[in-house]
Image (cartoon, rainbow, N blue to C red; front, top):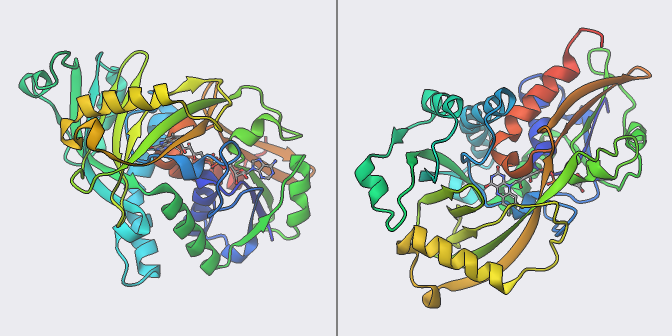
Length: 357
Ligand SMILES: Cc1cc2nc3c(=O)[nH]c(=O)nc-3n(C[C@H](O)[C@H](O)[C@H](O)COP(=O)(O)OP(=O)(O)OC[C@H]3O[C@@H](n4cnc5c(N)ncnc54)[C@H](O)[C@@H]3O)c2cc1C
């Protein structure tokens, strides 16, 4: 092995995919090590299965994030085709990665640079007219757009990505590390003269020895998942102090994810409160009345998860230690599925860059 990726969440898997697809690292040279791996669930130790998930405007407007989002949006099609070729006879619904229309609404006008970036590449992008905004009475949003987005059935997609990588030769090892240096135990070869470790530990970066990054914090989310075969569109509304979203998950069950919350520094993913559930149901059925009456909804489950947020944004950074290249790639907050492919690409570029630090 010449590459160890610590972390089996979506960021770790996207990183492995980038190494194989873009840098042509032999998959058999890559080992993914994680306390939790695709197929597992953990309320507080593994964020990826809990995501909604879709590609949305939740992410900030700095240059790096705009790149991560754009790269991911533009390259998910190739990834989808690659996986579907592998899982012959299946479709995007089965894979857990499919296209749906979306509308995003703001109580304020979003940053100009964000809008300029979005309109330059989003498919079927259109700014909503005043008449369309006025339909959201009694409090019409200040701005809104519609476009064709990507929808994920997160646990399913995560599992299928892992199966694809495994079939190519990527090795998965279940282990909990107390120090990042323990990752060297899995690296015994070189790729182009380099031994590489990628730190994709999400919230785990807060406590992992050798990292202990206390800029990392959880942004807790709670969602209500209902069965709603008649809703095949996304609808999201961003306020200054709230986020309301309706996200259909690809797949036969026709789950609709209703959210949500972004609670800064709240580490409690074990408990879900009834008051928050009622608040979510009230906000989402008002936003998109076609969901149905609250009393008629078939609620499948209520869940909470912790987004791996970081003050200053995700950490994409390279270190050299005793001839070893270490690339940190964590802090994807609420946008690991929609930006993580771009993060993985940048992490791969950082690792393979020729320049010394
Ligand atoms: C309610 C909710 C809704 C969301 N909706 C969306 C959405 O619609 N779109 C979107 O893009 N994103 C969404 N997100 C965010 C998304 O889920 C995260 O950005 C993403 O899952 C982060 O992935 P990760 O790989 O960085 O972290 P994780 O999935 O947490 O993976 C971390 C990995 O590191 C391992 N690890 C950590 N520490 C150690 C250690 N010491 N030793 C060994 N292994 C270790 C873990 O076991 C795990 O394998 C949502 C999140 C939540 C909670």
